[in-house]
Length: 190
Image 1 (cartoon, rainbow, N blue to C red):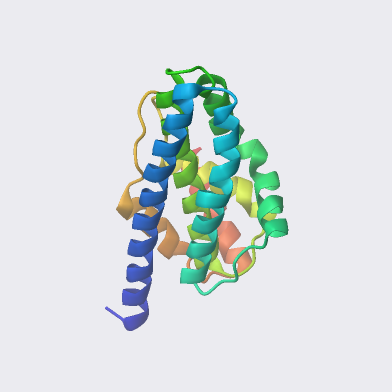
Image 2: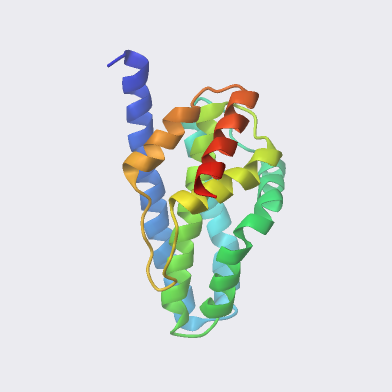
């Protein structure tokens, strides 16, 4: 095994564990907010952006030697993803506002959203510095295909090997090659 491949394997292993840790922590915090319901769930949602999502995204980028996202780029990225993550947010917000019952739905939605964002940033960061907003929605669609949540009452953690295979397949790709691989993968699922 080459030195570069070994280093990439180590980075990936750290990232996978990091996403899992943030997903579990976020699920716990969001679950607690679901016990009370609205308005605590809204306050917690705003808090985890700063305590979980932004640090996770920037830690992943740093591991790949990429610049952290500033608040403007972070907001812009989330804005361009809003349509793609709306389903996760909708389930969380509708079911999560119901006191006591919201514990479960908030926890599942928090895990799913943390994993999807972590996977997205890993894929993008392994490819290069730039975040092409056009590719974001296609990557999120691909992530949904490879990690389907077929049961709203159960969260399934993404498969380590499948996630690794996708990240390694786009690592250091030029824009065109990256777009082609994402499109080919999407076509295979559609």
